[in-house]
Amino acid sequence: MPIPDLSGVPPWASFDDHQSKLNDIVAKYNNLLVNLDSLNVVSLTADHIDAGTIDANVVTIRSDLNAGAFVEINGNGMRINNGSRDTFTADINGMVTMTGATIRNNLGTGFIQLSDQGMAINNGSYNTFTANTAGYVTMTGALIQSQTGYPYVIMDPGSTLFGAYSAANNYLTVQALGGTSQSPQVLIAAPNANMQMFVSGLSAFLGTTGANLNLTSNLDVIIQGRNIKLTPDNGNYDVIVPFDQFKDDASGRTLYQELLGKATSGSQTGLGGAANGGIAPGTVLQKADGGTVTWVGISAHTHTQN
Image 1: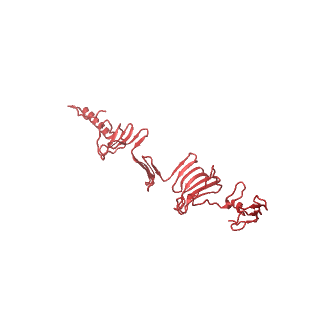
Image 2 (image 1 turned 30 degrees about the vertical axis):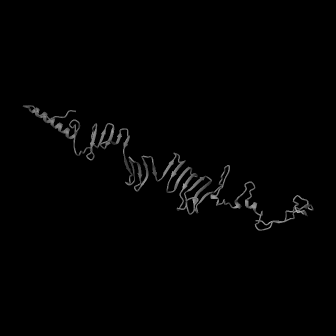
Image 3 (image 1 turned 90 degrees about the vertical axis):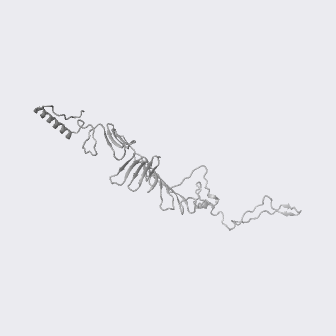
């Protein structure tokens, strides 16, 4: 639009000329004070502007802090430029691109931060979640859950180190045990049975003094394979099983029952063993030195049990 002019009255102006010019000046003055639009302002330079609404095709706000930095609002949306590149853009479709962001909660302590290093979630004291640009993720806990609730996977250093649940009573967990002398416990739970496995003792390292591998269950533990080998370490240790609990599944009898009465160390066996040795008693045998002996057979005898 043209720039409004305030030309003077013609020479030898009449009263009507003065009246018309005065009315024109008043109208343009009112327009300047009230509307302040493109009719009377093409370019405006100011250190400070207070305005309720600015209606323009392009609004560019230049920063006095960084050379060349500016904020621009145009027909495509909004962009913030640091003088070299856009650090923030938001188009009219709602797509936002930024080099960083901090989102604070309504308590004013915790926050979510996005930067060129990645992402961080902080509870006000420390980061509870971080993910860097290399793809490494660190978190204090995690829950991966289906829409129906089960199955789900949980990681929580405060209680269940790791858990995989197909139902409330059907799951596998790795749980921390109290103290520093025991390893985490692996628990496999089913609706009517469960099994635990952990290392306990004076040391948490299996094979060192006092460290035991514990495998327990409230029902049968079944180990099935082509061959099952129990091999104590270094040949210096033993497979330890109570004989009265080592049972033959066919007869139902324990090894203790089978051995009971078979032998008693230090005592004599019953009298027996009489035989002819395959030679009829009374047979005369020639000796190597030329003499003879008569074979009487093997008499009944006993043995000392070891």
